[in-house]
Image (cartoon, rainbow over all chains, first blue to last red; front, side, top):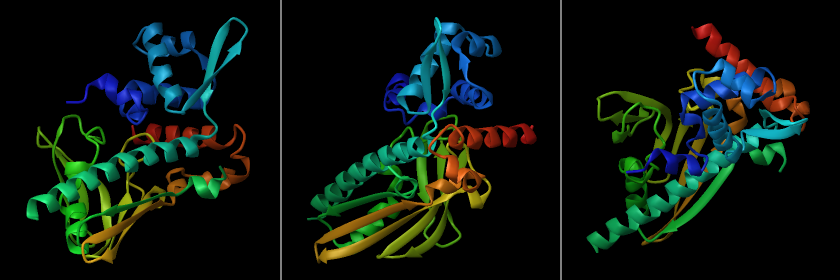
Length: 109
Length: 160
């Protein structure tokens, strides 16, 4: 059983969460700081920060310092981010396929 | 990485199995090796079905009985080739407009009677961005991806 946190680590599951999609949609309108995002969402600032970290690790958003706070925006290299997700997906799928097909061959041998 | 390269993912793998077996495992046991977090349903997946004919779908079925059709089978030519669409948006939701989906071609090549090479090409990934063509020139700066997402945002608003 894969836990939720493990899913998030590889960035592949970053978009599987409704709150993170809401954050992305909001950042699509304009770049914002954590406090502004938290004001629109039914979650705390630390929770927003957690989600932003996942999105950042997945290459979907970037953060930059603006005065004494950090402003987040969508990563302009989004197509590359999507490609990277699919890259990861196919790497894992091909590795799994290799295992299954050769295990089946070994059984039939 | 330039944009043309970014729109394709290619993989090759060699397995110690005859071509017929290699093809059958890929299409009949897809759910056994697909990563489990590849799941658009609200519950764990019990089964992934790869319908073995053109016009069929690849769909997941969850423990609660719900189903998610996330690919359309575009070519089914055992044991050499299969092509299917990728109807999953970057927002991790089903993309219902086929113009905004990418496609996956899988070719099987016999290297020997007991060895098969699988060549996978996931192409036209850039189609997932509606309006992407219009901002192609600006992809290197802030114009590309943000615009693309704004358009998505509008699609969701219209649905409500």
